[in-house]
Image (cartoon, rainbow over all chains, first blue to last red):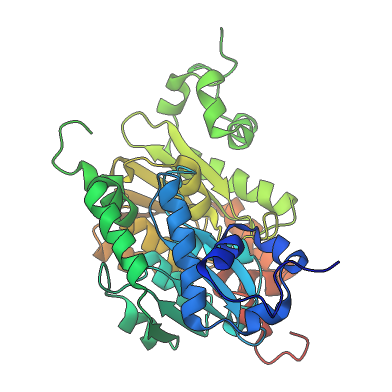
Length: 195
Length: 195
């Protein structure tokens, strides 16, 4: 069957958005391998940001993640935060993408995340021995980059301005949800009589 | 409706096993609150070990976890490792039970885990601000108890001999699966031509 997205398809937000929304297991049947080989790191970060946008549109926290194979550049896993959508107390962009990837050797992969990893995700990244992590936003949050590097993982900063703007807007709209996602409902409830 | 398990039901492994297997959302419709109030810490650890046994019987890693409310002693979440069952690269006993509990204030809860927490679970326990963690096995694995304490979480050791024996048997049977669960497939593949 002829694939709709081929190595000759021009790279645009519109086509990257289709890839963001397709289940990872459907990519082999819809996208030619050559398309992925021409994508830059910034393009993969765009896919992660488009996943963050999907999460925002669902009422959730706009944070996305993408795991790619370093050699083929194919997507092995991707996802976005589901605190709201799944009532999931720790499914961040990174944990979501890693869960989607399943039981693979992460030392042959790179993870793109739209937001600087929290303590849990940073720990998971070094425990699963990722070769590299690319961080799309150290403006809204940061802190664990040096710790991850100290564990032998390459860390690159590649900020996506649309992703940063989206996160900034979201944080202003839902400050409590933002805190819950980071330090749990316990942090939101501190000193509040309603909890 | 009269509930099958009441405050007068004697505590036995058989009834704790029913509770381990019931979905958490079904407990309110099947078990009287008073039953949970009479359970000791060792009883909740038994439920966690019975969940580990369930995981073992499914071909997975025998590690279970239970989250209870400190005041009511009711179960808020529970689960077991699903590396094999869900092809899930980091769903340990603790992450499974916390996922099951959903968006609650974990500072009012205790988590029982059959095995000493890995780096990721230890980090999640302090980031979600648990009041207390009870560890059922520091014989097979340990190391993060002091780190968790340093973050303000109470850590108690309450070893369950059947749980320790089960984990020991499993580790001898499936050493590679045990390593993958701890440090990822990357660790298993190191130096192996087949990977």
